[in-house]
Image (spheres, rainbow, N blue to C red):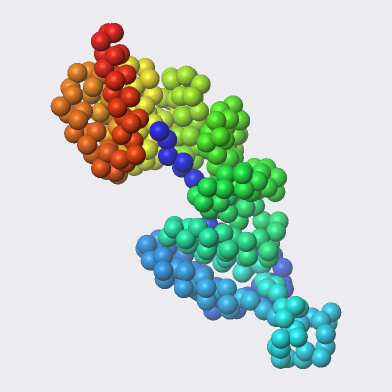
Length: 313
C-alpha cells in the first residue's frame, strides 16, 4: 500500500514587477508575511495563520478609481460594496500560503476557501490550483482535484510538482499508464523531487517492473534518506521478487523512521510468515491491527496466501 505523497507550493515573498503593486503593498503587510514564513519553519502554525491574516487585511484595498462612482469620496458605505475588491496581487500569495497552513492543520474546507480567494485575485496563477487539488483530494473529491491539476498544468506546462501530483492521483484511479506518463514528465522537468520517484516506483510495481521500481525507490531514498514510505515501497518491491530478508530490512527501517506506518507492520509480518517465523509475525500483525482494525479480513487472507506460498517453496 502506498502513501499519497502530495506536493504543495508555498509562494515566497515576491511582488509582480509593477509600480502599482509595489507602491500599494504596505510594509507592515510584507513584515507579517515574512513573520508567517518563519513561524511555519518553527512549527507555529496558529501564529503563521495570524500573521498571514494580518498581511491579507493590510494589503487589501478599496478600488475607488476614477471608474468608480465619485460620490463615494473617501468613505465606505453599503452602497459601495459591489465596487470593493482586492487589487494587490500580493494578497493572493498570502491567501495561498494561509490555505496551506490550514491544510496542514486538517482544515480542508478553510484551505479551499483561501485557495478560492487566491484564484479570485490571480486566476492565472498555477500554484493555488495545485494546492486546492490537494485539499479537494483529501476531502474525497478526486474529480475536482483532477480538474484543478489539469488547469495548473495548462497554466504552467513546466510545473514538475503538478505532474507528480496528477500522476499520484491517476494511480488512485488505476490509470497506471497515465500515471507513468505524468511521473516521467515530472522527473524530466526535475530529477530532485523524491516523491516523483516514489510514486513512479509504485507505478512500476503495478506493471510488474520490479527492478525499475527498486531503482526508483533507491533514488527517492538517496534524495530523502528520512522518507519512511520510500523504504516501505522498496520493501514491497523486494517482496514481489521473493527477496524476504531484504524486504524485512526495509520494512524495519520504515518503522524506525515512522512507527505509525501500519502497512510496514502488515508487510513485515507477511514476510516473516513466508520465512516461517510466525511468532514474530504475530507481533507485527498485532501492532498493525491496533492502528487499522479494518484490515483484519484482508490480513487473514494475506496470511493464508503467505503460508500457501511457503509450502510451495
